[in-house]
Image 1 (cartoon, rainbow, N blue to C red):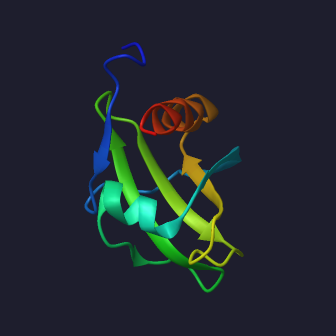
Image 2: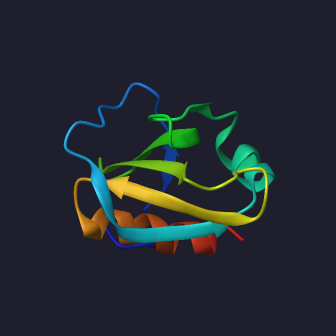
Length: 98
């Protein structure tokens, strides 16, 4: 599936088993993320305050979270997934949403 048709939507029930950080981050304000994905769920651990679980139209699952950052300010958000290619696909898609 090419990036022209790839979309990511919130799926709080998707499994995050096997996901990890692959050095992919996106920059956005908390308010922009809330507008795109709704109110965040509680962070994945004590080092993240905000998190979204998203699923791509290709079935790839990612988590978007504010690892050691204050999500209330313009900041960098970690993208976790099962592969770097899924994380990078999300980052490209996210940039196109501006």
